[in-house]
Image (tube, rainbow, N blue to C red; front, side):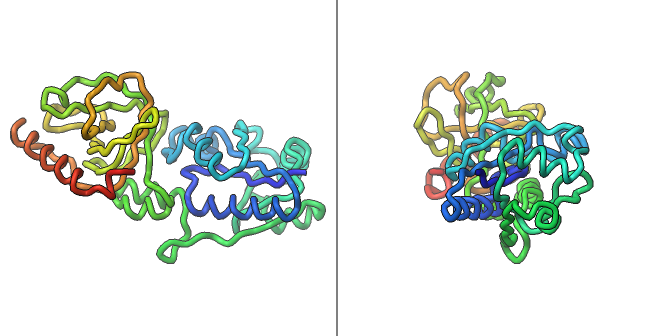
Length: 293
């Protein structure tokens, strides 16, 4: 017998964590296995269009976050056939027969199945042998925490709000690739990250945070944007690791954003840019709590 949760779980925020805590609690009371079924790709990428919404977490990041919660994860392929599956078939063929669901933990007002007809109430009516456990939404500042709300906060530069709803610092993980080498010429070499498809970049600007790889963690000044002072380029992310001098090319780097510092601006000349970067690094060194991850 299996106790399940089902959804996109993008970002694995505090609302998702409450769902998983309820799942584990029910598991202990009912002596069941637990299973998280996460759709791949994001359901709205099939229902609407790929890339909308941008993603708070890649599959690898999601696996890591959910594994910390102590629940097994299955990435379930989501396609138009599954989207069009009638509610009753979805419950019988998908949840019960395929995954052996005996208990289902849902968020309040969670919907599934064709036309969104699946809910806690319809489940109780249709499948009385399937135990249903609903949890109330998790609020922050009086409003429900959601992935959409976190995306909006990151895009508007409200990093503290986004991090509070995530229950952690927003992170971006990618492989370090070669850039134009401009940072090194300025005396502040940066690691340029190649990010997973559709990964959400926050508002353009400069952030304090940390960068980690292979067990090492370094304070970092992180720039998100197109570097207007050095000739515009496609928007990306680069991190200057403090007190580090080494080769990061090809390594997987995890960057956590701890605090918003300033907007990305265009400076009159390279010397003015270098002076501002020196100030940014000095500020990051002083702001230990924000930069240590």
